[in-house]
Length: 243
Image 1: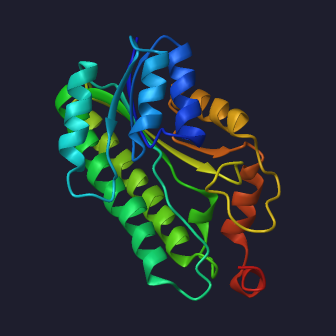
Image 2 (image 1 turned 60 degrees about the vertical axis):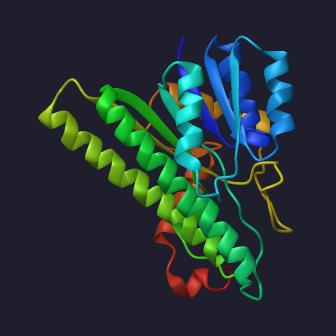
């Protein structure tokens, strides 16, 4: 039985992952702004679910996380699923600010704490839901693409840091999993054209499997690896026609 914390589990991928871990017999700590939705899940599975309602845009993320870990009796895996993004055609500062506070500030504060927790513990896993949007800039939502690129690059840095730590002390085993979904049918999906959109249940099952297999990086659904390869090598003169 593992102890899992999912940051952002009131709906969508976070909620589906919580259900999968519950089915797996694990203990799950869930967070989110809408406490009544967390309570609903806990009422269904009182012996397996602990809750800690809070908004990652706040300034008290670590105390909330510490409280949840205490309720679980420890931590084996942290999944950062909180995210925000919206179309910003006019470069709306309100949108960009909320995007940055959620996808950068909240993310780095929580993941930084989790990594150091796992260093002291000697083992653990951090998984973060980034996005295929992290690969290139986008004129419709520049802050969203940039924030997801920050997440993926930070996770890569943590991976290299975990490798260095293991060389110094072979007992330390910290796994880092960067999850980059394409379009998934959740409220986060934006835009008129959403090709290869996956059902949240299918996407969540693939994410669950990737985390359990301790994958370093995974595209969800798997076919999005093709898009990722194209985006990485697409020249600017081509991309600027669509971005």
